[in-house]
Image (cartoon, rainbow, N blue to C red; front, side, top):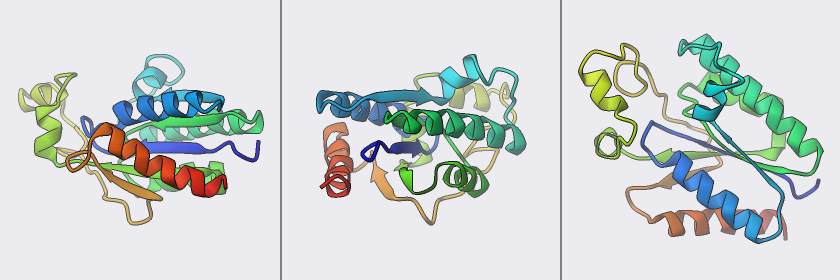
Length: 174
């Protein structure tokens, strides 16, 4: 349980949150860690399918995910989570629930890069008027002031980003 942590990736849609979270989960598992992987899209398809995208619904979305992460921590299982978490109030809620065991990792990429990576077609749908409140375009994304780590997916490869995170992980677990 001492070595269990929550790695909470947050950033714009298309910034690389899920890609990095998947890679980190694999790396931790290869080192013998037990890992639960939580993803915003998966949570919204099941446990959180009753929620919309208002600030309050987003707050409840991350609160529920953080509570699940807390249960995992109590079992000694690390959690790798990827949620947009666009407002400071959302990230504060995650910290409130998880305390010192959470590492907020800001996955930084420009809106232009995110649009180019638009694997879900969301930026295109927003441009066509099909999504009225889209984070970073027509809804706010507050740049973090207190992230544990900032990872630029424009400047570094997936492997280099994971190495940066692992360096921090090794320092914590030394």
